[in-house]
Image (cartoon, rainbow, N blue to C red):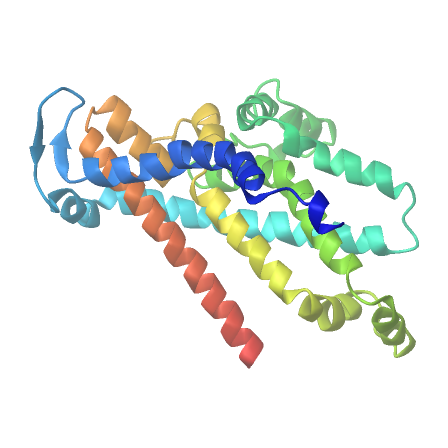
Length: 294
């Protein structure tokens, strides 16, 4: 393109400005408002009392918050293994010569990504129903009554039960990312590996994974950040129950703000979620970097 046909800087900035304004108004400004509110004892009314770092001290000592964070860690562990692990396996299958109708498989697997988390939550809540849900009905039809569970009412299995819909919904998202990375590998490298006897899991473990390590780290960070702020699906399916066995930090911050009317402390909990998310992402990057150096 000749220099005369290139858009001028004013046009470029004009096109970027609406998106930047939306980002600032919807993301950056609420963050600063939350930080400001976290220094006050505020119940939503016109009066607010400045209390400095008292909310942060209370949050650090809040056993309910750390219990919710532990639930988050368990949820993240299930979703990272499920979403990225299954997506990688499917990506390798889509690269094989055995599988047919690959475009159809990609479309079907990606379809749940476009669904609302609330829709997914209601759908799986019906499927998990102990009386007429398809999960228990299917187990009953196979004669596996001993495997029938109260999937959303048992504190011991409620987190894995909530993770399964999340895994199902976002496999397609990570599949597209990993598939693009795998397709970017020089095919001659894979062909030489096959000639040397590296087929199946050996090719995946020793050839493909090291070559797409940076992409895998990005998917892990995306998975951690996305599932750290998960709220709507759990709110629809269990509301944090039974008891607080499925209450995650985002749901805890919501309950503090909306149900207990402690908006200042709720803002502090929201900032805590941000800090913990950044810490987990940093740890994952550090762990990946050390592994690569070794």
